Image 1: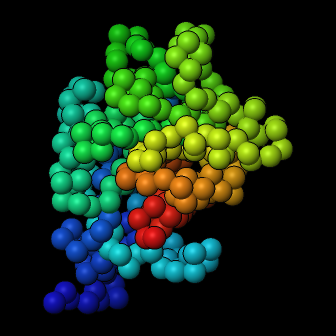
Image 2: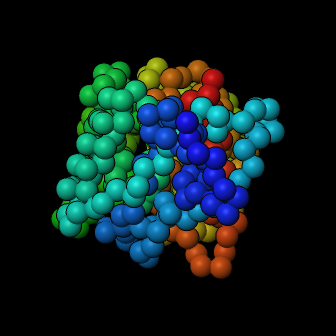
Length: 295
Ligand SMILES: [Mn+2]
C-alpha cells in the first residue's frame, strides 16, 4: 500500500503524480527524459528541455476539457534522466536499449528531448517490434541530410536515419537544403510543406498525409514545428509553423485512424524567465498521452 504524500511533498515526475500513479510496475505510460544536445547547430540548451517540460507538467490540471477525462489515472511513470555518453551514436544506442526495455515490458513510450537525433534510437527499437512501422515526422526542418559535417548522427540527419529503416512522412517543413529537397523528390517521400498546408485554407492535406502512413505509427515532434510565436524555446526557430489547435487536429485525426505505438517531443530549449512555452510543451505531451494511450 503506497503511502499518501504529505502535502509538503510535491514529487518531481511528469504530472507530480503520487507514487501509486507513477510507479513503473503499475503505470501504462513510461516517460524517458534524455538531457542531450551535443550536435545542436545554433544554440545549445535542449539538454535542459526534458527537465523543464517535466517541471511545468507538475502544475497542469489533469482534467482534459476536450476529452472530458483525467488521463493521469492510467499511471505515468517518469524515469530518471537517461545518462548520456560521450559520443552521439553511443547515446542513440542507449535510447534504443531503453526503448527496447520499455517496449518489452509492454509500456507506452514517451521520450522527451533533448536533441532530435535521439529519435532514430527509439525508431530502431520500434521497428524491431513492429515490422510495418512508419514514422510521422513533424518538424520545421526536413532533417533529411545524409551527413551534417562528418556525422550521420547529427540532429539534421534524423529523418534520413529513420527513412533508412521504414517509411517516413514529413509535415510542417519550411527549412531544408538543396540536396535534401532533391532526395525527397527523387525518392517520392511524402512531404507536406508549411507554405502549402497553411496557405491553402483547408485541412484536406491532413487526411492525405495520414493515408500515406502504415497502420502502425511512431510520431516524432520537433517543437520547432510549432510557430515561433507560441514556441520560441527551440534552438533553430523558423517562421510559419503550426498553431496549437491545427497541430492538435492533425494528431487527433492520426489517433483516430492509426495505431500510434510511441511518440517523442524533442528539441525543447527553455528560455530563462519565459515560461509559457514550457507549459505549451507539457500540455502537448499530456494531450498526446490521452489521444494515443487512453482510448
Ligand atoms: Mn528536427
